[in-house]
Length: 260
Image: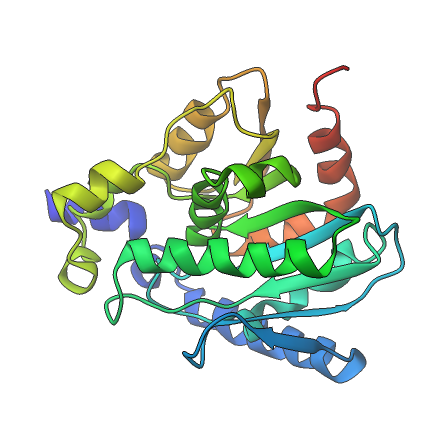
């Protein structure tokens, strides 16, 4: 049983170039770090409880926000700065969120960090609506944060890149040894289609595993959602492909807004 679920989630074995993707993330983000000035504020006492933002060139009506992945227990916001330039002409600023990691904290704490970080941004940018751009676990955290009424009210929409939504299969994989998800956590933090969310564009790569494609297809069933598949991309390469198609993805997301 675990062998099958590992074949869906264990990218170090699924993707021979996985390590190269991680290295490229850090390298490309390093270039962005050299080219832009970042302002950082903390929302808690832990070293990972911070948000940062850099200037964009678009309207102050929109604040794009990057939420990184890593199965809630790895990676960091600074190595996802490479995604920021693709969204800078949409907002006057682009934000990037860091959060604590499992297993040092529980999943509820990671979700609470996301809510706190987004709440800080809402206070800092009162004229802006959030556009959340989450990859993998970051997509799960973005949608989880939308359970907060104030965040939902201030969110224009979400681009969910290859998200993890159903946690039951995760607990059957190699990840469970580290995450130790409880049945209560699985029940509380698994996500399903929801017509009450702000609009969501679910994005997957055509080369992803069946579980990720299943998740995107099922989550996009409500009228306030859509599913977009980028041919030939995998779970990791999808981030760069989404950046290259950021204008089209943002346009597709905004088309999901209900008519007044």
